[in-house]
Image (cartoon, rainbow, N blue to C red; front, side):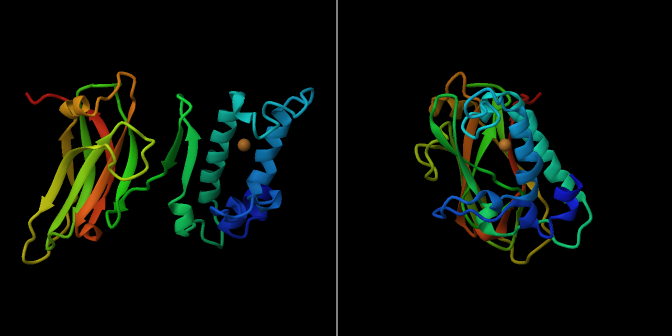
Length: 247
Ligand SMILES: [Cu+2]
């Protein structure tokens, strides 16, 4: 552990692994990061069954996730990432390559649909469209509120953006077949003043009927599309809350 966490890495890429971009040939095993090649791979092999032809389940890439220990193991790999980030070092721990920061991943959902997930980091600039999968506290047509949190704007500029909601993760185009849930427009002031974060609340109950959300849906897709001066807007976060009716 000392070798792969502290001694060997002399850069963030040495720990995390070398870039692997769309179109690149598959990377060789040695291009992985120190913990991936080390304890990560070691646990896979150790918990695989050598009596199976390909060391299934944990000992082979295609079958590893069949074993529930896979999820404990990979949660621990994430924990080690956090531990490494807090260790003193003479190199930066962050990677600012946009290909890394904006990476998206393809997974199969429980209905065997291939879905794309992109980790959206907040706070985020609205210079470009923000699209994020948001978990619902309840399933289906529950009485819920969409909260666009910590909106910071330059109040000397005309600002407008639209918010769309969809129940379909598969449509990767912005706002395709989505319902417009709300809009934000700011009339500019003559001079710029201090920027105070504010929250936008949008009641979703009626909208759920219009997008025909299913009883077992437990996520929605929220797309925020800049219309005017998006680069002067920062969004702090997006979440859904159970609606508490006004007294
Ligand atoms: Cu693994």
